[in-house]
Length: 284
Ligand code: OGA
Ligand code: MN
Image (tube, rainbow, N blue to C red):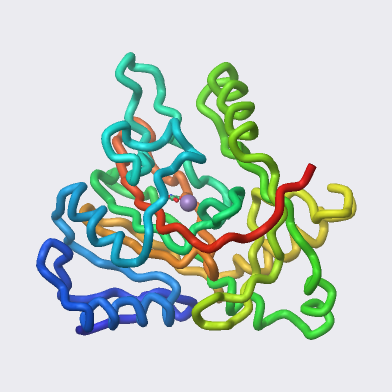
């Protein structure tokens, strides 16, 4: 199997792979090791069905049925999250059109944050619609010893329903539903990767304050750490091609959809989400 680096910061492309074909345990083992080593993997030209996407994803671990995001999952395949700007059947704007427009790690607002996600580009706009990824292990390593000490015991409170919304009406309904299903949850600001043993920052724009501190007190440090982690040297910007599958490790990367495209054009992506281990605690 051949791999090609995607950027200095993180990521590798897996060349000559076709997920519709049988793959031995040894071959998948190589892919999984590259996933751990590089944080994200790109598989180009995967002309496949939803079943292929789901089956390949299962090799990474048990899949999330997206009970935390019931409005966004496919009604026939609960393992598939629809990340699309396609309008609803009645012509109203789809709710998934602003998914991921802020720095985040998938499902951080739940008690089982995701291990990894596999996003498939089914239809992309003529230009743009890129996604950025940040290497949170490298970002952590680059901090001073003093800062590492300062943040060691901190927990960030991750809020669901912080995404930009389609319309005020649907929005407020959606947000109250989201918060009811997913109460605010405190996650360590520094997480130890269960497989590599490496420490990584775990933050993003869903975090508004640290547990035990006010928003006003927390904001400067949260903003600093997010700004630090998203410096160019820690970031890879992915320009999608149709039939790309991108796999990312949510335990040591975060990402953001840029929305840099003509929104009258269709951008349709489908995501599977691999369940991670339990993390965090619900805050009152
Ligand atoms: C996601 C997500 C970003 C994008 O699917 O988890 O954040 O660019 N998507 O669609
Ligand atoms: Mn996401």
